[in-house]
Amino acid sequence: MFGMGHIEILIIFLIILLIFGAKRIPEMAQGLGKGIREFRTAMRDVQEEIDINPPPSNNGKNGNKKTAPTTESVAQNAPNNTGDSSTQQSAEKGADNKA
Image 1 (spheres, helix red, strand yellow):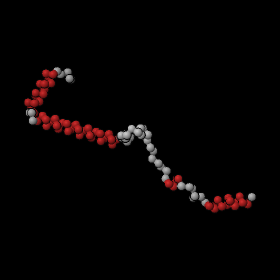
Image 2 (image 1 turned 45 degrees about the horizontal axis):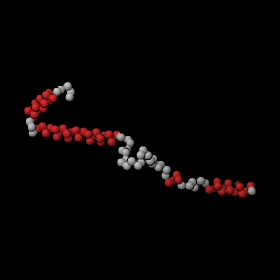
Image 3 (image 1 turned 180 degrees about the vertical axis):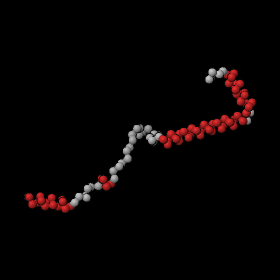
Image 4 (image 1 turned 45 degrees about the vertical axis):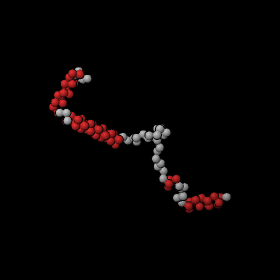
């Protein structure tokens, strides 16, 4: 492990134990664990914020199907009755006169 044998690692742990004491080492390990956990959650939050794709759904039925939002409004689907009725009437009169 990193070019160190078992004896060297044991000696380093004994020196740390003598310097910090038996009560202080668990507190330091707990603080280190909390710091790593907070770092991971912060990384995950940043990745979710940056990710433009929504997270995949849990049910596998949909697969990779994506639904596009509808952009048509009701006015676009309504029949076009905004034309000038006088032009329609004059066209009808012209057809009657020719017949």
